[in-house]
Image 1 (cartoon, rainbow, N blue to C red):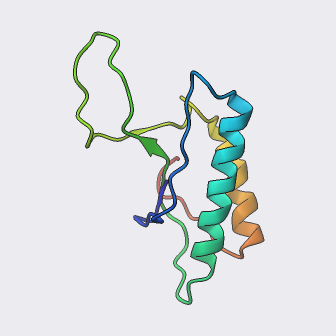
Image 2: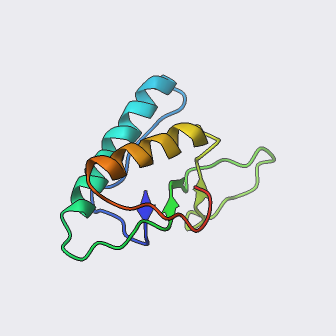
Length: 106
């Protein structure tokens, strides 16, 4: 999870689509999002949140091609529903008194 170009050292949420139920993945994401907002909310000079990138580099090509590990792709609409992500962002922003002014969609 990268928000406003910042990534917590412990800001990764791990998921396994073959062994975890979608509800478990969603809960793990929500827990990590709350950890991030709590951390970011503790800053003294907080900028509004303008960019959210929820991504993974762990993808497999259906045609067997190699995907370089440095490539990161969004998991929104693949793993997490956009509406749920947006709702949770709004909820966390309100809880931690942060502004969200997204320049682009999640």
